[in-house]
Amino acid sequence: MPAKDLEQIVNLCKRRGFVYPSAEIYGGFRSSYDYGPLGSLMLRNVKDAWVRTMVQMRDDTVLIDAAILGPPQVFEASGHLANFSDPLVDCTVCKRRFREDQLETRDCPQSMKGCQFTEARAFNLMFKTTAGPVEGSGAEVYLRPETAQGMFVNFSNVLQTSRKKPPFGIAQVGKSFRNEITPGNFIFRTREFEQMELEFFAPPAEGPKWYEYWCNERMEWYVSLGIPREMLRIRAHDADELSHYSAGTSDVEFMFPWGWGELEGIAQRTDYDLTQHATHSGQRLEYFDQASGEHYVPYVVEPAAGANRTMAAFLLAAYDEEEVNGESRTILRLHPRLAPYKVAVLPLSKKDTLLPLAREVHSRVAARWMCDYDETQQIGRRYRRQDEIGTPLCVTVDFDSLEDGAVTVRERDSMEQVRVPIDGLVEELTRRLGF
Ligand code: GAP
Image 1: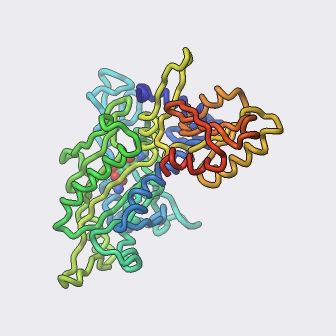
Image 2: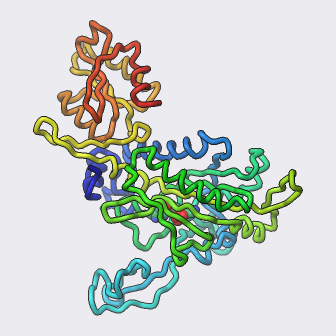
């Protein structure tokens, strides 16, 4: 059974060191989070799994890492300065601000009935700051609200240096920033977050084909990493939901405890961005097809996912509680690729006779995978701890190991235990983990 309540995950994340409220010793910094020893590993695993599928396993995509700060010209051209805003209303009673499109009635959720809202105003979501010691015009810069613009402004650079030709994609993983009016639901909506985006450049006639292709591919990615299909759906946007650059978008949505929520949008950005940047920069942003002798502006299909809310979805879907011998056991049934630790090495006792061998086993395993080592507490409690943080395999070194050169491998989900010779341990763990 996946988690029914967001609090189950929020508590586990705090208790076990996945995610903490940011600046907690100062009372917290609203809707910002820090990723702890386990959360930082898992978030990295989510991003690595995405890069593996979207770049490593393909021959038609490349990865870049562009700047987070950008000059106003980029966002003038992309349309974000003019259009990247939410409609904001003020309640004249409680003075709080709300997104008009998220209000269910004309009554303020705080002041309730009879309140008055001001007329809606467009509130730009970009964070602005100044670069260099001089304030004033020319020094303004923006924190990127999406990683995508890095791909568009580097289109020619990548085309020339990678020797790719359409259809091909440019991928990027990195931080984006939005001054959200209503952040919330833990790490679902924050002002600072990480995106995993691909801009896929295709000959214009192939646009619809690739849109359909990417909708399917992206849905299957979540399923392949363990989210039950029935907790996912694809939903096409209504015309009034579309971003300023999109001719059509479908979201991959996950059944969060509060209802369906977006994990990723697959958008048909068409030739909008390249054309805009070509006009504003005066550079030609086209592809020359030698076979046909034609210049054309590629059509872009963009699968754009959020790493943080995807991590929340993986945690919620993996959460399970069950009863074992009259005791309750909490387990994160995470896919091994996503689990913070793949293996934990647990010496049965802290006695000096056992520890050198346990350390040697840890070194062998840690050379291959992220591996925990824990010699405290009774073994049953240590197994429970590893279950709760999603470690797929535990390796127990006991006194027999000194005699027979073998260890016990225990599986998280089945709790099955088998004896394995230390010499063949890495091969056996590889077989069980699948990589
Ligand atoms: N380049 C297109 C783009 O940025 P988006 O739908 O606005 O599209 C893509 O964002 C993904 O980024 C979303 O599906 C979501 O997973 C993530 N995302 C967007 N805003 C976020 C926020 N405030 N907090 C956490 N994740 C967010």
